[in-house]
Image (cartoon, rainbow, N blue to C red; front, side, top):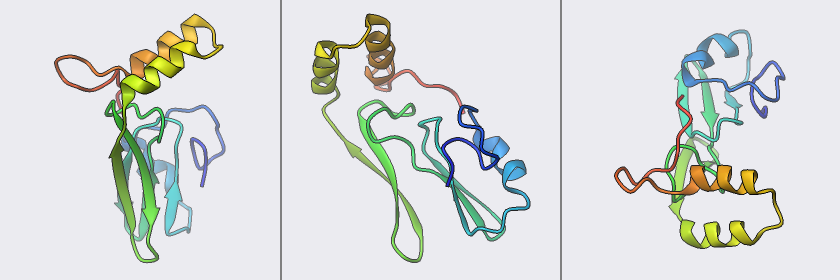
Length: 122
């Protein structure tokens, strides 16, 4: 399990297309990565690489908390809708710098056309 990459970089945005090359040489059955807040799962031979996404700040579908569950035999990706507008109201009341609040709001706010918040492409 690593915050961003198996090599220990805490801040690299590792796209799904890079997962195969970055897990070569690892012997674990499951490799969990994060940092991008974009949910995904891919298998490479006997290895499964998982990014559970983000419960509070998913960057691939405004209005859904996403996470992963291991049930003892398989890894499952899950999503649960939540009230983004309520979260945005609370966020705007928080004692945070305005640029931080607006940045978070841009990710959480659903686009009126697509219904999805701002997305960092993977």
